[in-house]
Length: 211
Image 1 (cartoon, one colour):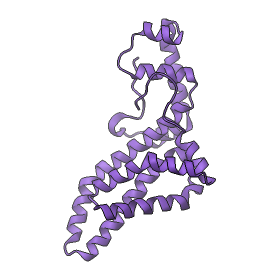
Image 2 (cartoon, rainbow, N blue to C red):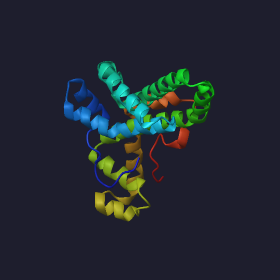
Image 3 (cartoon, rainbow, N blue to C red):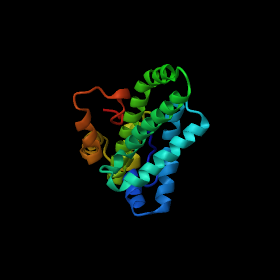
Image 4 (cartoon, helix red, strand yellow):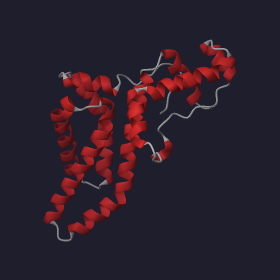
């Protein structure tokens, strides 16, 4: 996650947008499409779909979300749902192409083998980013500002103390309390439980801040 000093500045959380979209808020739907359409298109590109097929997948995924959003159990996991659904739809399109192209099985299998690890990594990364973003926006403003400054390139503790009004000796303990609040958020806790015993792909499940 990248952040600047100050409270979260990326607009409504995914959970808020999903809840609003469930009740027919068009602006929330538009915001979801704007925020996550690049994820869908990037997966289509990784499966090497043409523009027409990618457009077909894009429309299918959003139509499926219209049908499924009311039963989505964890709104913060929406990016993961979108990534998984997009992968399945890409496979559907490739299978349809295989039926009309001799030797298409070899093409589909080679694409799937080459892209599987990357697609899975992208899915996990999207889930982590969504959960982290959701948890970060729920932190008190003071924690948001402190963690945002610590995530940036080295900022002297004296500067942090002056800008936030925190004694230098209290920055470390305050940071630990803020990170504990971050980890205890349901979206982060769910990811930790799901990934216990596994090595995180890309090592991005927590923000990197100075000790």
